[in-house]
Image (tube, rainbow, N blue to C red; front, side, top):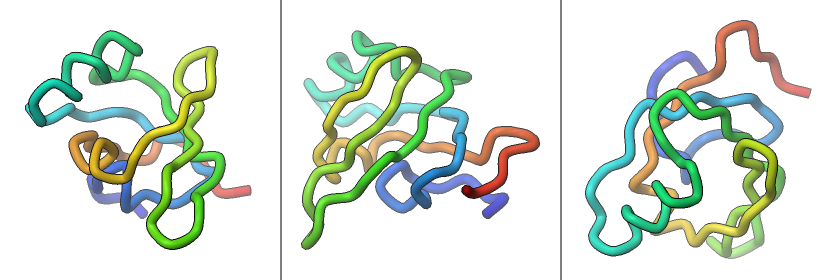
Length: 84
């Protein structure tokens, strides 16, 4: 994966860098308050089955995100990052 994708479509266990956060209404402000800003490092730890929430590591904490909120966050692999 070298292209820019949404956080909802990104693979797990890969260091990612946030490229942008789209304006998705009130959720956008909340994401920015959590530190989800361009340049921040983020990693998807787990995905719940059946399009459930994502468990995400952002900066120094772990949070749960709904897939629709993750659609507003665009990411790319962090340079030198590999799976595993």
